[in-house]
Image (cartoon, rainbow, N blue to C red; front, side, top):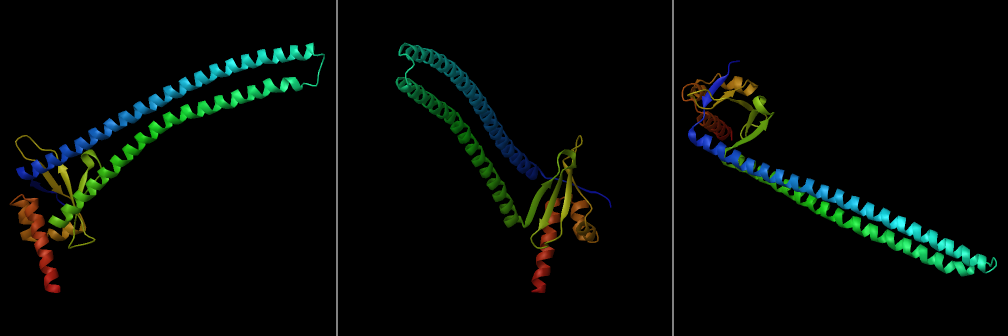
Length: 234
């Protein structure tokens, strides 16, 4: 099936540029949040490394102190003539208490860094939800005002625009953006679908594409025809 080119009007180009500018703003905010999350992760890594180093130093100091205390206890036991060891229970309990307190401080320091990362993740999630809601509201508005649901598929040169009419469920039209040539406007090409083949038999509908080069007029004609058919049927 042949491709049917049609040139966008300046108003449509301006609307597309405005939409692209808004999307770029969203992308900039998303990139900034990603950088902040990366910075927070780096901060957490540095904080964890410092906590580990501090914990290792405290552990070495505690081990050294424990070794000195154990040696002193041994000397005390030897001097008491090999007693039953009850006098050594006090220093041993103190060393256990110090070890427990050090572990609690380590857990508290690590928890502060985790909280910062969780807060950043929550902010990024809220931004994503707000962006999705904005996109859905925009699509719903287009669908309610113009009667067409517009979706983009693919990326780059393979990107297509799928249009579905609220008055013709189950049918779709596919358009593909063709790069603008020197001295010519931006063109959309109507791709082959079952509905497009059916519309090619309508001389009046195709005249809006081939003669007037207007996709809005083409879509408006289709909408008018569908509404008229539904009105006559009802």
